Image 1: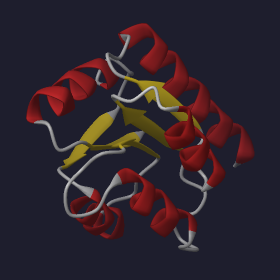
Image 2: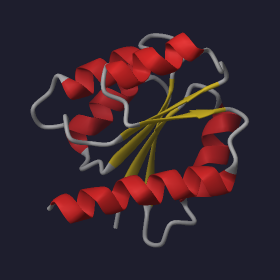
Image 3: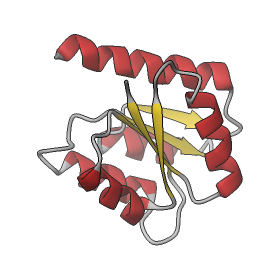
Image 4: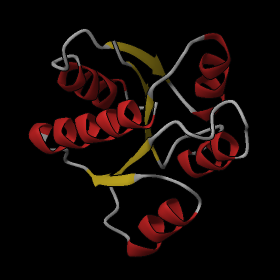
Length: 127
């Protein structure tokens, strides 16, 4: 039963991503509106995977990745970055600081599901 944390400031986009990942059997979706909100949810919930937008107010996705990777309790949680930019430097920066994967909007549901499932199954094989 994976707990999936979706961090996205756009309600429409958040809904779209939630709707997609809810197709994963027995998954539970937890939503956050920015990095600060997401970090609070991490401390109160067991999260198996994080899907985070890069561009958000208050705390952006890159800052969130570095906080998660710098925390001994959360550092092994897979993170997928989601952004509108196809900007190569954003992608490189996200992966360099510890994101596991990167998706560009508009998101293709199948691609998102495949990525989430493959990262979730890699956690299962580690335990």
